[in-house]
Image 1 (tube, protein in one colour):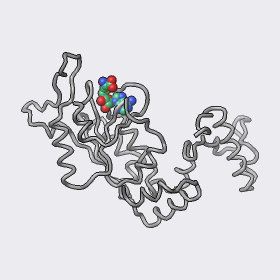
Image 2 (cartoon, helix red, strand yellow):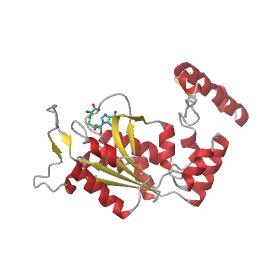
Image 3 (cartoon, helix red, strand yellow):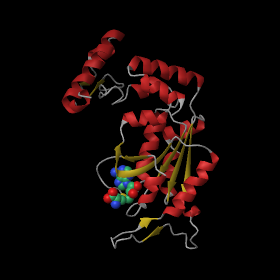
Image 4 (cartoon, helix red, strand yellow):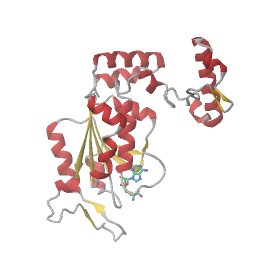
Length: 256
Ligand code: SAH
């Protein structure tokens, strides 16, 4: 556990969290590195070079590295899977290439977490994204086929994360989803850091509706209060809208 993680664990109020965020952003304390291990790097390559992830890497606030698992197999056909014991259908990713890849990464630096994307893992939420955004080095291992040899999960994986109760063909989309959600909340990545902090789920609430110009489009009007210029009133409106939407659409968030 690093010092930044330790501090945030104790910052429960949103005011303190925001203050801490400002300090961390100002001093540019966090540089995060995510290593993604996959049999299909092409599937993630384009994604990590666009939008917020591209900006974060350009600003040198985050680095995302893709590793093709096939580069770590000793098999001359570059195979990384084999038949499962027990005669079950499907193919299973073998221990050796995964172990060799993770070991070679660990020789170069220490990792805070070695994450396996898995439908039976802990649910990925904004809280998990916030927590992981304060780590320095993460490995995300993408499963494929029927999954990975269970011994890897027992011996090398420190955390198993699911992006939802459905089964994907591989962990690549899950890794992309996680990398995006994690990196966008790394302090300093989004220009106006308030904008990430006012997103849905940050305070266990949905966000208020948002509008842009024109104020009247085909008679569809922007709420008057937003045009009033009265900051206190606007804040009050924003909060009551957020609360109303949360109560109506996601009452479970308020019970946390
Ligand atoms: N046999 C497995 C599913 C394998 S799907 C089972 O029943 O649990 C192949 C791979 O896709 C998994 O190993 C995992 O890495 C990834 N995956 C599938 N669904 C996922 C989800 N909801 N969240 C994260 N990763 C997922």
